[in-house]
Structure formats: structure tokens, C-alpha cells
Length: 114
Length: 113
Image (tube, rainbow over all chains, first blue to last red; front, top):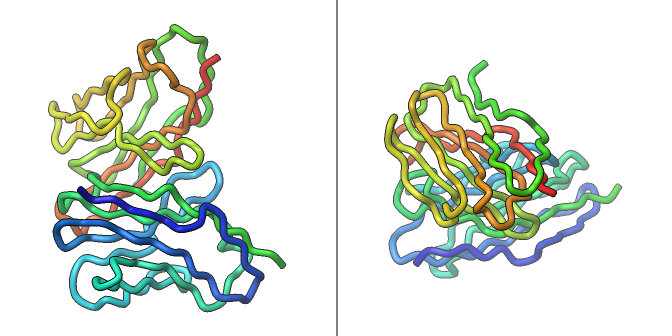
């Protein structure tokens, strides 16, 4: 069965520092992987997705993620944090090729200190 | 602009009452979904519908009901049988194909006392 583990429910970085949010998945078939961002009291927005092809995926707002099959990981990174990056981030894996049938991780709340 | 509209933003009900959450989309998407979000729990799928007049239970359907009479609308009813209904509810839609991203509404926060 597919599952997603996000390491660290809270991550705090200084403005300008590297952002690294960790996601490991379990899937019996080649996975489709996604990162979403949620600002307070709002819905989720797609940051980026991996389906097939290039393993380094670039998304919006300067974020990128690398699919590493050998490590079953899909960590999200951004070279330099901005105050506006403070939000909750969710990693998700597709269970059937359909976007709606996603298994979500429990989320990582990112704080950015000035 | 196209999007998903959830209403109301905040909803308060007394225990034992049924309540219906609205979700409307003008993206012409076939598929629609309802998720429940609790702090530290991620998102859990309640119901989904891939075509009008058809829907399937998700992981936590007990105590909830839905209808899909129109492509644009997918209302969720939280019944009195739902033991712990206080939560943030998110509606989403998607077009056909795995490359079509999920579009989310801004959610309804339901508080039952």
C-alpha cells in the first residue's frame, strides 16, 4: 500500500537560508508525487509534481524537488527562504494515476525568521 | 476567473443537526472531491465523484453524504451520525488525466458544539 512520511512537523529557518522539507514514500508501483502548499485558512496550491522523466522537478516560487527512487524520497528544497514562504507543505503520492486519489503526508509547517 | 467556491467560510452548528457544505466549480472539471483536514493529520478523503450522478466513498465516509446532480456542484452533508464533525473541509476538482492538477477551494471551517 502507498504511504507518505514527512519528517518533521515543524521546520524553522532564517530568511535567506536553505529550505529542506523531507518526504519519503512507499509505493508498489512507479509513483506520481506531488508537493502542495497551504497558507493559513486557505486551500492547497500545487507547487510541483513528478510523473515521469526528469527526476529534478522545478515548481513555483523557486521551489524544486528531486525524485530519488533508490532512497524512495522526494524532498523539497529552496536555496534561499523568503518570509512569504511561511506556510504548511504537504507531500502526496497518487494511488491510481488519478490526482484525486492521493495519499497525503501529515504536513510540515515552515516558519521563516527575519 | 475559473475556480472553486466553497461556502460558507465558517459554519457553526449544534450537535445533532445535519449541515450541508456547498462546493461549486466553473472549471468544467469532471472529477470532484471532499477532504477533511484536522491539525497534524494531513488530508483524508471523504467522498469523490468522477462523473455526474456517480460517487464513491473515500477513506472516512461514515457520517457523511454527497450528491452530484450537476457537473458544477458537489455538496457535502455532515450528518448527526458523524461523531467528531468539527474540522476544516476542503473541496477539490480535477480534469481528466493524471497530469491534470487538483484545484482546491478555500475551505469551510465547521464547528459543532
